[in-house]
Image 1 (tube, one colour):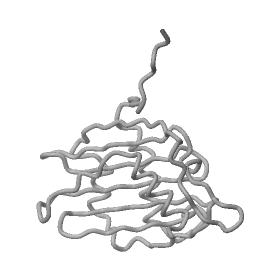
Image 2 (tube, rainbow, N blue to C red; image 1 turned 180 degrees about the horizontal axis):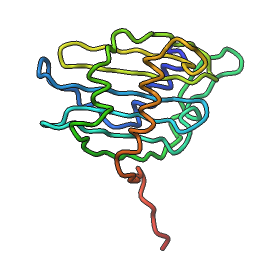
Image 3 (cartoon, rainbow, N blue to C red; image 1 turned 30 degrees about the vertical axis):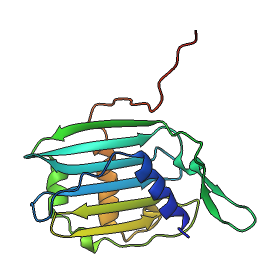
Image 4 (cartoon, rainbow, N blue to C red; image 1 turned 180 degrees about the vertical axis):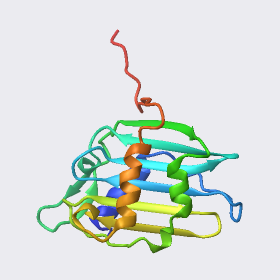
Length: 181
């Protein structure tokens, strides 16, 4: 059985943009940061190599993903509610080669990030996946802002809020609005 934060991350992956992973040993990179805060907009940010340039894609969930998970009050069993449709907004753009965020992640050692995920339903959960096409790392942390020691996580999370504003905002809706006859 999956823990609550892992099930929540699975829901985020289900609704967000596809992970276009680079071919092995191609020298290309892919970074995904999933921000699943208790309060605030739940977001998936992807930064990746696209051709000879870097691209950013931001998926914003316009309704709480937490509402797609039901917790049984008797035994605590977790289930997803398939009938709920989560509206999303996806935006993407190319990044300038001199962008300071790209410089920051090129110097970051993602393998040294702490993995400190709690099963607390009311916690803020963050997930990170990084590959340089030769290896990868996947880490997660809960409530990093309440801790003093995860400086690398806090730097990545805080900088991601600014990067999220880079691509122009566009709305993509799953369902069409039907006209009444």
